[in-house]
Image 1 (cartoon, helix red, strand yellow):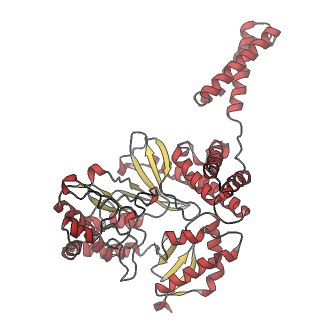
Image 2 (cartoon, rainbow, N blue to C red):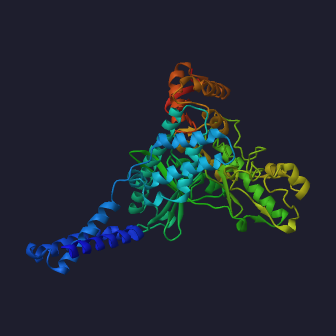
Length: 513
């Protein structure tokens, strides 16, 4: 009997070592192997079960494999939010050398525990468990712990960040897989048999309970962008096919729109800004690129396109592409933003001058050494320096740029198509909104007062009537956004002439009185 126990213990120990070193590789076969071994043992008969050495060994292996299977598939709980928040916040408050790095380490440890937990892994999917997704969560959670709000509020926000990540990634993966299987992604060269390799966040600002754009990477090298919102504006304005920009001769790309029970979503071609494809070698080449920006400005004006700051443009092959066309059909007189000094793509590449990655634009162009401009245009390209350093007159290029006649006709039908949906409206910059949100405690209603004042002021500046009776509902929405670490987003219903905030009417056009 001792020999049998030794055999069982040896087999169990060996199996545990194998599982520990290659658990993922054997997990899929454990159930089948266990069933086969158990069946064989049963056929040999109970009378020899503990007498026959071969059967004893097989019994030990079967028990070991079953134990390994149960160990590998055990329920791993999510780590404690309160414990993590307390450690991170208290360490940050120490304000001594090394406390920042130590607190960041605690945040990283919490996220690693989260990514290992059974419930979180099941929700977000294997392709989402990657370093970029982990870094995204670490940054959000770490920043929350550094806010000057109550510990209870921080824990509520972190809990929402985690739940939002699970929910939004689960929806995204379901949509991606459905569209692959239906063949809807074939315009991107993605067939029905292509597997997803990884899903990575794009940007760090979220709206509507943690929703963010994602970069979908497929095995084989294909990449596309997923957005959890309607992409009708991009399809109508700059989509490959019968779009406004196609008629105007501007840059277009593939766009696929989708709709399900959770709302609208879409996919777009992934564009990249590479130095090798965006280096100007002469004054004439630079003027040609600037002329493309001037044309974009004039064509965009035809449909009230706005908010085209440098972070909403990608330059690929010395062609500017609009990657965020949510702000459209704006009242006459509101500029597109393309030519705006400071943050327009005709003048800005990186407002942080290299100090902050999130302000590094993808609209950058480079200058060949033979143009002898050095680092003059490394981060900015002001009209004054264009004139003095290269002899390029941006105002002259703009005045001489003509819109093709066909674009005027297509702009009319584009406006009609775009009327069917609410567009984004910019009441304040993302930075201004974010700065205020950071000081709001979702458990303290009065901390929303500053945001309410800002919203009222901006609504009235847009020549709308602020709806005073909506203030209690506005406060609720502000606290809700704050509790999800979201940046508030506002929309304009063109047919009713109303400004909306999470469905709440906050402004009405004066002509609708």
